Amino acid sequence: MPSKVRIALDAMGGDVGAAVVIPGAAISLQRHRQIEFLLVGDRAKIEPELENHPALKAASKIIHTDVAVGMDDKPSQALRRGRKTSSMWMAIDAVKKGEADVAVSAGNTGALMAMARFHLRTLPGIDRPSIAGIWPTRRGESVVLDLGATIGGDAHHLVSLAVMGAAMASVLFNKPRPTVGLLNIGTEEIKGHEEIRDAGDILRARNLPELDYIGFVEGDGIGKGLSDVIVTEGFSGNIALKAAEGTARQMAELLRNEMQRSWLSKLGYLFARGAFQALRNKMDPNKSNGGVFLGLRGLVVKSHGGISAEGFAYAIDVGYEMAQYDLLNKINQTLNREGGALSSVPTAPEDVS
Image (cartoon, rainbow, N blue to C red):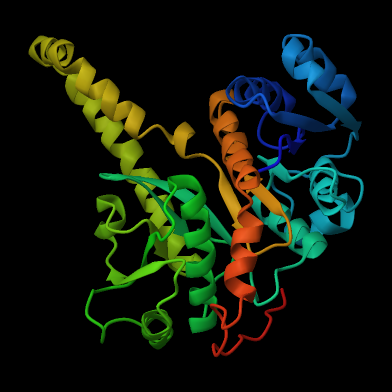
């Protein structure tokens, strides 16, 4: 493990920028004193925020640019206008040059993925990167991927997601052989699209030492925590994510309304507020913040754009864990060892967008 983890922050990214990024970095630094930060963005906006956090100021270096990628910019526009000059690009460039171990941004997701893929390139054997997120479950947490980096995927792509997701889970959950399931419309082997069935056959036949393939998992199995890793292509993964986030907000609002309906409901809340607080902590979106871009020759973490400083700190924490425990090396060892995970799996053609 490296004694220091260097993290490049896109201080201009997100709905607020430095006003959230800098306090978030200060929170994460309190938890991980080994972090050194590169703060990429407008010095005039970063320095006033740093004055409120002396410890962070001492552990940080500012890289100035006043060019920011807009939250509504199309990926192609961001590449043309922000290449080499924007805070997002320069944070990724620090990873490319070895000046940082990981880049974290709350900026435009499509632009961040386009820049990261263009500049860092994909790992050998990986045709497309993915976004992996941490999903709260009844049993703890699971890694779910892909959450929307690309749409569709053949058996090769799904197997590569399983390998990368298992490596991430082994880091986060300290499990040498995490369980992996393929998201499907049923648990029977005859269910689902051909590519899902083929991926299941490959994972079962290869019996990889880095993961324990358990078969198909239905949508409700994600929340039940049936597997440490849930694998799906980006279209289904993004719909599942947005549906879960919307349901969580709906349930919170319904519960809040019911608690205020009558004096008896308010009295009941007083007796049960400990349980409600525990539930709130369990479902807190801040604590699940931080999607890891897997499959690239460098580590990039995406934070929600409208997150709080505490939430951004959790995204930094994820990046720290991925770098501290050498996620890229774990993935490479699985992919490139003799008889590696993707050998004998036909490679999908590279998609061009």
